[in-house]
Image (tube, rainbow, N blue to C red):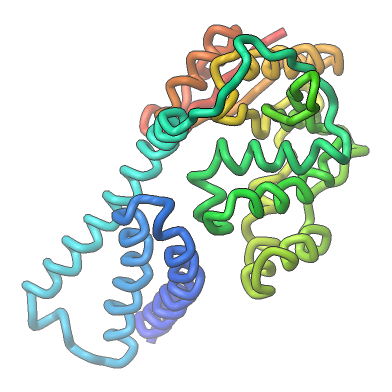
Length: 302
């Protein structure tokens, strides 16, 4: 009886996974590698196949060793595809974005670093949508202009913690920083607050899913009474190479120290070598994250 209950729960979990994954895979089919879409869809599908046969009492695998070995091989390939994506894609996607930038720019633009205003938030959202597209394209679809507006509305909740780098003449936002100082006066992200925002941009089912299970975790408070935390920092790919990212990081260091914190913390992907060089030359040190982790924790002490 216990085996049947476990199989039923696993089967239902696999079906829920298919409901969540398949539409997202279809939306993001052209913007993420096909092997990753296939891998993440294969996991719940194989789960349903195996445990569904147990629930329905279909003896598909016990008497057919070759079928069991095939299922195990497909499962291994799916896990391998997901692992390769997690470890490789953040750095690879940054290289692809930089390779396709061809905007005519001045030799050295005048850049202003300032706390974000209401008018700056859509631009900050667009910067984050472009810089972290390997995540947001997958979650919300490949329309980065729309994703930028969505993120801009979400950032309004955290507006006191958002800083931007803007072109002096036009005011165009070309870089953005979300610095979490754990200020109790800054609202936290909760499902009732963000669900109406998400419903403007996606079906209410997915809005509920992201509001209750995804975005509160992504946007949770990670600063502490003694440390600041860089949640997101990025520079529009069209404007990278001017030292804007370094100026934003320097601003984060200055504001964190002025707030009386003892350290500034951030995480970045192991494959993002460009970002890692920036942090290491800015005085951050690798705290010794577990060697197999795809993300590295950097700390700067004051």
